[in-house]
Figure 1 (cartoon, rainbow, N blue to C red):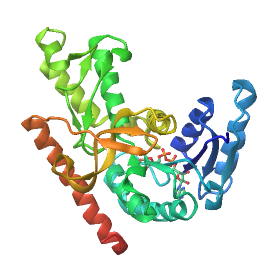
Figure 2: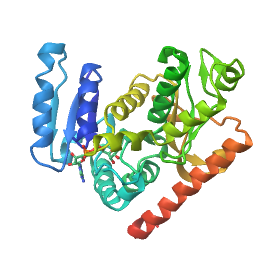
Figure 3: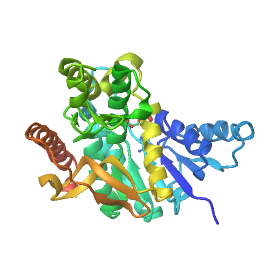
Length: 320
Ligand code: APR
């Protein structure tokens, strides 16, 4: 059986890390694409030379030609610019929208059957635009945000409760921005919901509120420290988890930016919600019961995503 083909559009910090992880995990042969000449080729050569040490045989190539992503099974998109200190994800909109147009057209022409995972920010708007430009079915184009946001939330919760991250299951909904909604009621340690742990005296509401806030600005905290770019290890790991769910038909229930058609009262928008990912891409959107506060927070998040789409349509009228 032929190996899977994984195409990575954007060979920057996240793209390079994705390629490394995909090779180490044996997901398939890897094509790194970038507009900058030399960078994808150089990274591909460097990564290929990990093979003899790590014992992987994946073929890793770098390219500036979309023809080389032909018939890819999975495509992960990180092309565009990343944040610098003082920038919000939304500040990237104008530049990255143009990038999504080029990427969407490249995918449409060369790999229309791929499962496409978008990571480029501002995520909820970029994944929507990428779907529009590529014309792929909505279930085959998904955005990576919730897996990362809930990983951040889980990391902070594991520290707070001084337990292994393996015991923590956390839940984040909404857009990938300051309006994201970490849902405390559905977040657990070994199956025990956080509100019960507060009642048991294991933490306090104030401390959990601070963790929720730190999760919301988790990306910004890293941008402030790095100064020259944004987070890349955890975003790449999160994208790979989604690719594995598809390639291995794992039916994982993951929070992703998915296209909604009425679920959660939202129509024709990409918003972060729990979905099941398997061999057909996004196989199901799972609607969970939300309390009034979570519903109100989700609405704020949805309104923020809507505003970004209006801005996208203003910039590129083929989207209107
Ligand atoms: N087509 C392909 N690649 C492009 C294009 C394009 N039109 N425009 C830019 N790129 C490439 C850049 O040359 C660069 O190599 O995208 C890469 C982006 O890499 P980095 O700047 O290192 O950014 P990274 O940290 O990987 O983040 C990428 O993901 O999380 C988001 O906010 C982040 O939008 C950003 C994206």
